[in-house]
Image (cartoon, rainbow, N blue to C red; front, side, top):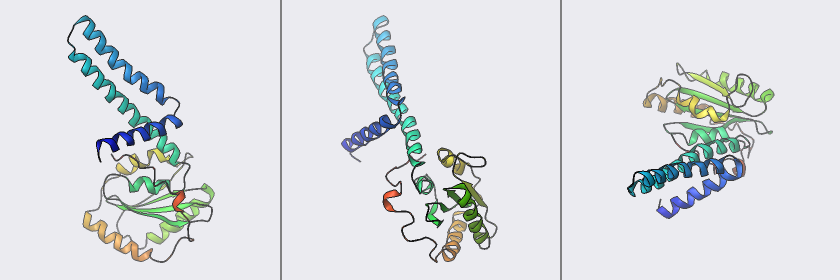
Length: 220
């Protein structure tokens, strides 16, 4: 990516965050001014113009730090409003995660996504709690017959009791113990692909214009 493209990308993220987070602009201004003010005081009372350059660099780094934190929060809030957000987040996570969005679904845009990785098999359910728990139970029963000794984890995305907010999904999955090797993940994926090869979704259950593919989550 060229320098110009990078600046354009930062500008886009800045605009996106400012529109959705009222605290972002005041925090960014404070982050810019404080290091610059500190450097100005040092130059005034101690001398040495090098401190002013250091202050400017510190201001830019501080603003980028605020932008990173607040933009991630804004993106997570935006993602909660879109069907298929959980699958999109995992697809953009660092590491080897094999994601099958919409392994099962309803016509009301309730989804169960399949994730295969070194922690084992993970089912992510998002949608109406009264519908997705039954859908999730069906998939757990179906997959448990072929995954062997691999761990089976399941999560319901939400803010209710026993659910995890989408903002904590990345951290939750990254903290899972790695119990499978790369070869075991490959073999598990082959078995599950054979099981899930038959159509599970109503056609167009996750329309492209409703998948949050444009929200590219920062890798960590």
